[in-house]
Length: 179
Image 1 (spheres, helix red, strand yellow):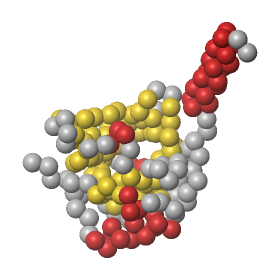
Image 2: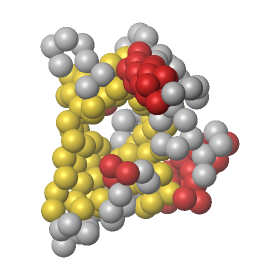
Image 3: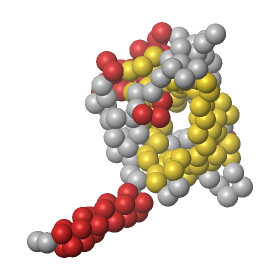
Image 4: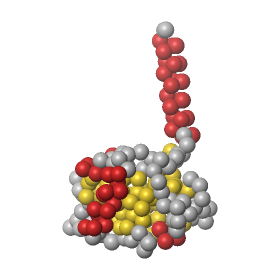
């Protein structure tokens, strides 16, 4: 294979990979709440714990704020304080339901046509605490309406995550009181 053929082959692979990432179906592979009330979920949630990943690296006081949009989608605003750069970081996105809007399986995008799974596995009846998984075991969050969570809620959600195969020993427990 000469250089031109190699370049064409690499270009085809790159285009195919990009197309797959844009068009791939987002599926929920974990059990999700099936009596989800989207209006109760709206508002601001504090991140209590997460499995760390690049966007949230070094962030504390992380919040996620959700608002219903007229088109049926949900606006998402994630915000956190970068303890290394000493400044606030924000990311705006949107979420859409994968099926019916009473099922807690959504897809979320912060980067144009690229979506990832957002699955609400557990939520209490008062919508004060939520356990959210991504589409694979690399993403997980424990969320709360308050900055602090009772220990029994923490343990309950961690145990759910362990049973679902998540590496809870790698959880980053958020500091919600940065001075």
